[in-house]
Every structure is written in structure tokens, then in C-alpha cells.
Image (cartoon, rainbow over all chains, first blue to last red; front, side):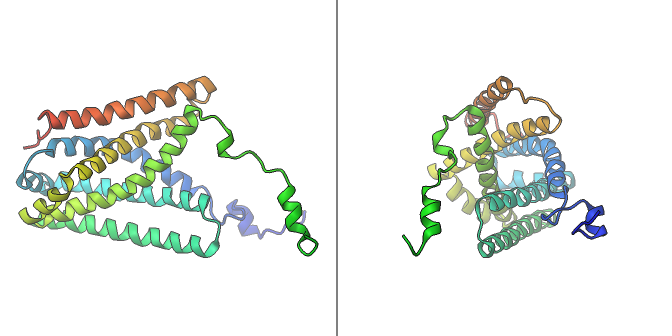
Length: 126
Length: 140
């Protein structure tokens, strides 16, 4: 049988999208991880409502809380990174604009994630 | 017309029905709301980063956050983010159930959409009501 696909391309099972089910699967894995993390986050936000910066600092300085907040930030942002790609893919059809937006998304996510994680470490070191 | 024949043919072709022609079943509303709240929550991640950076700056940072967050618009944004998180959470769990093959019958999907919309509003109002009536702040 003649085929335009190389054996490697065929064995990878990838079509013209150049990628497999990785995006779908990572979106689901982060979603499952975010179930307990989001509940914890809401519990924390309500628990800190109306308190002082001392309470927030002491709470976030605790290793477990810092780790959980860091995990919430990382999983949320990776989930957002994947989700925003779908939105951009769906609505933007000009290749140039699309690539620009995808790169803007990457930069913004890295910036927000970097700032969040730096702040968490800084609080723990205070 | 004669010099752009393709254009006139394309213009006379019937278009497939678009969004505006359909009535809005609850499933359609929750579908687009899931996407909108997802984009909104990405903005929420920016607010969370700003909050964390402010806290790490000590008392001055805390005040600079609350100077903006405690205004009516700030509270409205925080309420919107709370509702977005509750909605995206509930509807996200439903998406995972769909991935496992549950909840597809038309009536079930329609009913669950209404339940999720109602529960998300109730949940967000409950969280704000708890904070407002002094039931928050238990981590002190």
C-alpha cells in the first residue's frame, strides 16, 4: 500500500496536527489535581478573609501551605496554558496573529507563575 | 461582477445556520460559560500573583492590595472570580464525568446544566455570605 506518511509518522499515529493526545490528557490530569487543590484554595481564602497580613504571612510561611499554594499556582497555570490554546485555536485563523497570541500566552503564564512562586518563596524566607 | 465571478457565487451560496439562529438550551449556555470562566480565571491567576507579591512586601503591600480589593469594583471582581472558580469546578467535574461516558442523555445534560448554574451561584453567594457574616477568618 502506498502512503504519503513516513513509517515514523505512521507509528506515532499523528496526522496533520503534528501532535497526539498529550494536550487532551494533560488538561485532564491537571483538572483532576485541581479538584482537591481548588477546594483547599477556597478554604484558605475564606479562612484568611478579614484577617491581617500577619495571619496570611504565618499561614503561607508554613511549608505545607507554601507547597500546596505553589502546586495550586503551577497546576492552575498549566491548565490555563492548555485551555487558552484551545480558545486561540478556535477563534484566531490568521497564522501570524495566532503565533503571536500563543507566544504572548506563554510569556504571560511564565511571568505570572514566576512572580507567584517567587513571592511564595520570599514569604517563606521572611 | 464579471471580473470577480467567484465572489458573486460565494455571496449567493446559502450559509450554514450560525449561533444566532438557535434557541439557547442550558447545555449551550454552560458550554460557553465554561470557556468564559476559564479565561476569566486566567485573569484571576494574575490577581492571585498580585496578592502573593503584595503579601511578600509586608504591611505596606497588604494595604496596597486592600486599597484596591476593598472597593466596590474590587469586591465585584473578587465575587466574579469566586463564582467563576465554583462554576468551572462544578462543570469541570461534569466534563470529567463525560470523559468517562456518563451524563450524555439529552434530558440529563440539560438538567445537570441548570443544576450547575444554580449551584455555582448559590456557592459563590454562600462563600461571600460566610465571609460577610464573620464566619471567615478561621485561620487566625
